[in-house]
Image (tube, rainbow, N blue to C red):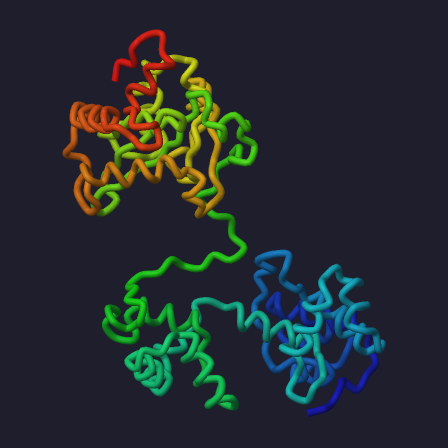
Length: 386
């Protein structure tokens, strides 16, 4: 195979030739259009790998285009550094380094059309699943899982023992996917952690749980932390069996007074909004100051709740239940009445009021052995009806 085409035609002419091939031109016709001989065009085609992969265009701006790869080849021919080439095409120098390493030809030359063909081949979907397609790899992975190895340990073992056999190597993610797809036998017991399901990794993708226009707990007024004046509440849900039912819990920080929110129609955002609005309507306005919640999707409509109730809603940091410590403690007390793994939909609104009444009439050490109802009564000019 020749090192390069025998003529000195410009890169633009070669680009035009390959564009015609991708449009469906025969080699001889494309060569005739760009003004070179058929044999010259054939040599270009052979040097590019003897194939033209259809190019649907880049999926994302982060992918290199054919023009980017031509610029990289021209830069290398001009002895430019990878950083200079990266600056000229608006990419990071790591991207250019990785492109040259991955898509150079076996003889070490970087050929832009060869490189683009290789990238398009890797991008094609669906790809055969590596572990499903290789019985030796599948057998090795299954044996190590049976010995209680983790996917990370198996991946490192394969890299050490099969460094020259790409077909016998697999990253931890590949092993996890094969396991949970059933390619490695029965799932229970395969992982030493005992897990039988796993969420897909979504690195770099915004979480669907993200709530718009959140006001975080760090912006909450200092008086909330002092617990000197009531009217500042913490809220959460306790979830029933199979996540099929829920009860809303509200606890006032100063008096530890509890309200339970009946959710007979489910616990998605509209139902939670409607239940909080209707079932706190009897709470005096001066006791509806703030409401602190975790970042659960059930409070996506927090702006509606603020407008309709007068509460100012604040959200805890992710995975920080201690920022609602009073509510977490109360939820623990409530599990005496609503054990985990039970169906919470069987409890009526009257049942919830009775449970709240019992808790509010139970003396609390933190209140000097007063009950939450007594502590709340000290701040009220009229009775709190529930």
